[in-house]
Picture: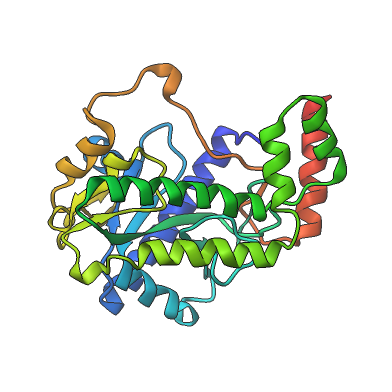
Length: 298
C-alpha cells in the first residue's frame, strides 16, 4: 500500500515521537545508542529526515542492546519492544521499538502485528581476519533469508504459482521452511547466536552490524569510530550519531553528501496494512488489507 502525503507526514511525526521516547529512555538508563544508516545521513545532510525517506534507524553496542531488551517491562505502556528471540512470528534479526497505539502489518504472509516503529540494530564485535569475517557475514545473510522464510505463511496456491512460473528457488526455499517451522527457527537463531558470540563486543577492536544488508566490507569499523557519539540535529530532536560519522558513512555510501539520482529517491518499505490511529486485531488487518488491495487492483 502507498501512503498519501498526509499519511506519510502522520507517520513521520509519530516516528519522531518514538525516537524522542527511545532517547529519553536510553538517557535515563545509561544506554549507548547511535542514529545510523539513512537517519544519520539525514541528520548530517538535511538536519532531519532525508526528504523521501520514511523510517528511522538506530544502533546499540551489543551489551546495551541486551540490557534494553531485558528492560522491556519498564517501557511506557504506549511502547513495546519486538525481537526474534521472544516473538515467534517476527522475521528480522534486529529489534524494533513500536508504538502500541498504531498498527502495521508489513506483509500479508508475515503474521506479526506491530506498530509504527524505529529499528534497533545491535553492534557486535568481529574478527580481524578479513576472509573469516566475510564468510561469517555472508552466512548471516543466508540465515536472515532463512529466518524471513520460516516466518512467512503461504497457502498451497502460492506454491503452485511458483511452480507454474518456474520459480524453483522460491518454491524450494519456502517448502523447506514450511515444515517443522519452530524447530528450524530455533536452529537458525542458534547459528546466528554462535556467529555473533565468536568475538565478544567488549574484547573486540573491530565491530560490525551483522543485521545489515550492505556488502561485507561496508560495515566493519574500528570500535573507536562509534565511541561515545556526538550530538546532531534531527529536526527538533538532539540525538547521537557515531563519533567519526564521516568514516562510517563514507564506508557505507561513498560520497554521502551527494544527492542520489531522482529515480533512486523513493520510499522503500512495503506496507500491507497500516492504521496510525489505533491497534487493531490481526484478523481485521488481514481483512482490511485484502479489501484495499482488491480495490486498487480493480
